[in-house]
Amino acid sequence: MNDATIEAQLQAIQRKLDDISEEMAVARRQRQEMQELKDDLTIIARDMFNTAVEELEDIAPFVRTGDFLHLLKKILRNTNNITGAISKLESTLDFIEDARPVGKELFNDALEKLDEFDRKGYFRFLEESLKIFDNVVTHFSVDDVRLLADNIVTILETVKNLTQPEMLEALNNGLNIYQNLNPRDVPEYTMLKALRELHTPEMRRGIGFIISFLKNVTEAQTKAA
Image (cartoon, rainbow, N blue to C red; front, side, top):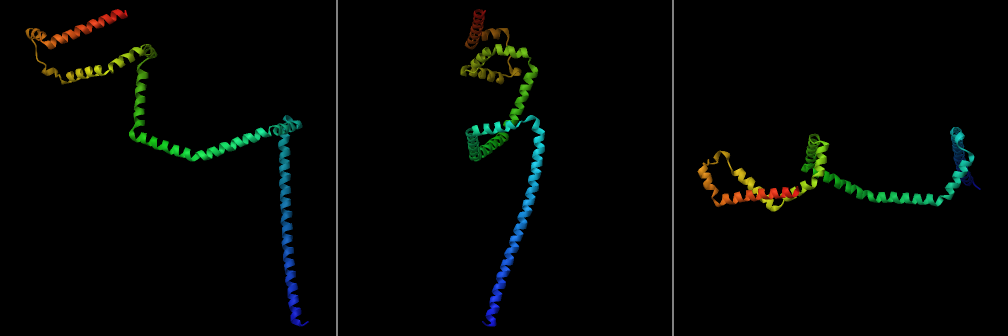
């Protein structure tokens, strides 16, 4: 065996020794870390135990040892109910998660609609309408409202009759005639001219209408009495 072979073997042995030394160093560090972790966990466990003891001392007068056993038995007896409740909770959470995009879309649509109402002036109109109600409340008493409630049917019937097409047309014609009349341009009538006008067909129909109207009103009042 020559010197070169011996040198190569020594180098191989040295490398193995270095590897062994490195592994031993790693193992030593791991043991040291585990020991440090063990010490830390021991301290934490001791603190938790002491804290638990202190907390239990506060509730000791109100709790007996058998209460914990009773609670444990009750939990075990209701395991199926608890599992079902958890399943329902999970289903509810899944539904909420699935419905979140739809809810977000509905919320955005609602915001857009509210913005549209605001641009069209709905909210300003509602604000001004509230002033109308304020004026009504301050102007009318409770007795007035009670009388309104007692006569609401008659009022609605009157409004219904007034909104009939023929009534609206008659009212509109009367208003148009009144608007077209200028009090300053109304001609003056002497008694003779007025008597002459009474004989015209228009005046005779007008007088007949007034007499028929007053007659029907009187008959209706007589029947109501």
